[in-house]
Image (cartoon, rainbow, N blue to C red; front, side, top):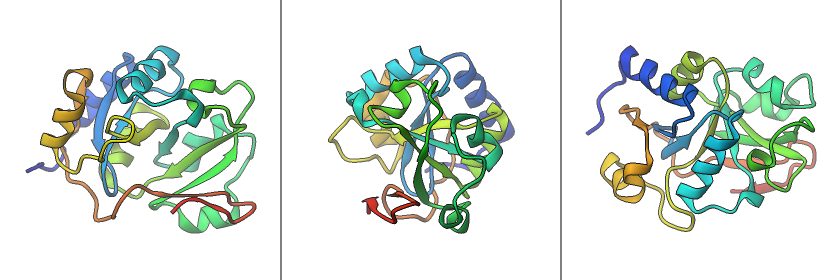
Amino acid sequence: MATPTGDWQTFRAARALRSGGLVAYPTEAVWGLGCDPANDQALARLLNLKQRPWQKGLILIAANWAQLAPWLKVSEAPEIAAAHWPGHATFLLPARDEVSTLLRGRHDTLAVRISAHPPVRALCESFGGAIVSTSANRHGRPTPTSIRQLRHQLGPGLDFVLNAPLGQGHGPSRIMDPYSGEVIRA
């Protein structure tokens, strides 16, 4: 069973992210896999470990809007996104032109979320910005809900596991287009 995260774990996880590492961490509902979104080598390594096509893009998760703003063309969160944040909802917003295609895929938008889950918020704050957030599983495989399942799927590909409790959510976050209202992933 996971134990509450201590400052030393959060510090070590953030240090691993800054050094180009891949970190597994608990999100609102499932184990997440993250890296520094500004590090193309880390992004490539993450995509390779997950066996995920780069064209799909990845999600950025943050503790606040200021951590997402450098990645986006919009200066503030759309009203519908602001109403759901912090929370377990992801929105597609226009990405800056210089955002790596390894992060945004073949899209001109970026999937972003401001988390309400304390371990995620602490990790983003310790790291000093938004981090990649994708489910910690190989593409097409079930998403782990325990550290044992996590290690079974991704094992030695991980540089650090932030041992803290999962939130009370059920399944990956819903992804929506805040401008059209279209639900991309329920």
